[in-house]
Image (tube, rainbow, N blue to C red; front, side, top):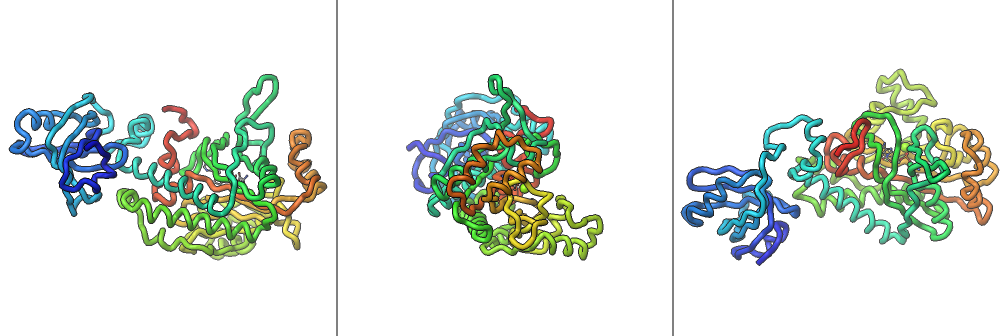
Length: 430
Ligand code: 4AD
Ligand code: MG
């Protein structure tokens, strides 16, 4: 019976045939252990010379790392194996022999692995991270569909700059200038006026010259936008969403979390509600912690965010940042004009900001004034302003960065391992 490694549990004590690659191998004169992988998982194949005979045993002994094969064997329950099963091999049919596979079981440097990302993805840890990424994507769609959001796809080629003009990738659009999207938000606001609650899920681009463990040039963002939702209600949806994806990964990826050695207790604590701290109080807290360099009005860097996050078991919202630090579209605080109704959600364990969101300005005159103050060309935002002309309403939204969230939940140090082919400063290959 042809099957996959993920499904062998349905075939205990029966014979199965699996298309696989050799992830690793060790052998003696009488027995060979093949670490098999087929994309769905990993399993050990045991080849006993006395049982399979000379020919098949010779194939098992000589087969090289990453060679492809059809392997036939009997599925055995095995308590010591992480997946719970082992394969007693009865036949081997080599499809293609791999010569000098560059990634060996020994340690390699990061740059070497990044140059071989197209092959590195096959390794057990990378496989686990991609499966967790997939579960976060799956549970994201599930959460928003269950909560009556409509999926909307904003354009990638745009004429506007929601998050400031310094980080844009410019390109020619025939005779016009265009940019690769740095956020779909403005289009999502238009969609919210048509469909109420919407979310997008797509690639975004930031020509940011940052070389940190949290920054990618191309990353994926989930951007919900909600009509008739004020800031506090938006925060409730954000914490429910983040708790939902964490609990989904715990439930559906136990093997992957184990492979990565993830501390499960830390993830189990991620339940709504999350604490909220104002920017004002965060500055005071940082002073108490000895960060004398921070003044009111400064943006927080990674060390500041980490110091705040370390104070809590769950992600924490920092709310009401100074107006001067944030984009043009954020609704002012009703009692103060120096701060806005916004929040950054800071993940635990040093992973930094995973969500940025706010209530949006719905007053036409104020919005025009802000566009002016940010030196943005009104003509490119005419359509956006019109949303404030025809039935303007309070509305809020947010953007969650997929890769930072994957890195945090997987417990991998750097976002470069949380996306299949990272685009980094100085890296466009492979
Ligand atoms: O805080 P940001 O810039 O917010 C926006 O773009 C809003 N328009 C979203 C909205 O309200 N619809 O980005 C949102 C999130 C960040 O919190 C972070 O998780 C992620 O996107 N992010 C990055 N991830 C990886 N590499 C980068 N260079 C990132 N920049 C932002
Ligand atoms: Mg932000």
